[in-house]
Length: 116
Length: 114
Image (tube, rainbow over the protein chains, first blue to last red):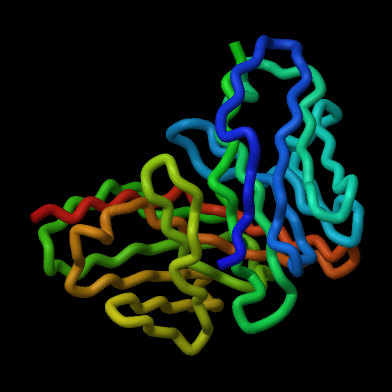
């Protein structure tokens, strides 16, 4: 069964460092997302990406964040200068535009980011 | 007002019980509605979509009331394996940008006890 894969599963970094989280969405999907979940809190939308550009972003997704789809398979989230409050689980997700359940997001297992 | 609001929980029920989760959403232009399930420290997974006519999948029944902006999930004959956090999810579509944000509620935790 096709799945979304994310790397790394866990990254520990120092405050102020740059972090890149990588995702390989399901190959025939067209919509890509990053969500985050701070421990014990809700799943929060960061950004959606379609047709090689950002289609929507939340207020969390400030200038410190960027996304890229460099080669047609990977979808990356970069945090330029990490802050303590960026510590969270980051979920990548993808979505097809076919079929009845076009709202179904397929999530990766997440990348846990710990900022010290 | 929160975009998606759920029963705060947690719910603790015995095996075999029937349990109902409620959810309201604030944006009347929302297009699609879902229940996701999240196990502890795992990724969310789609449980079922919610249609205006109501829909059932085995022991699970979902209802949508667009006029009241209300969504529900009913679990009958609950099993130990149903223990998880249940997330109410609403999708809005911004046609001009092809944006399609799914907004998650805070989740309602369910524990089914033997």
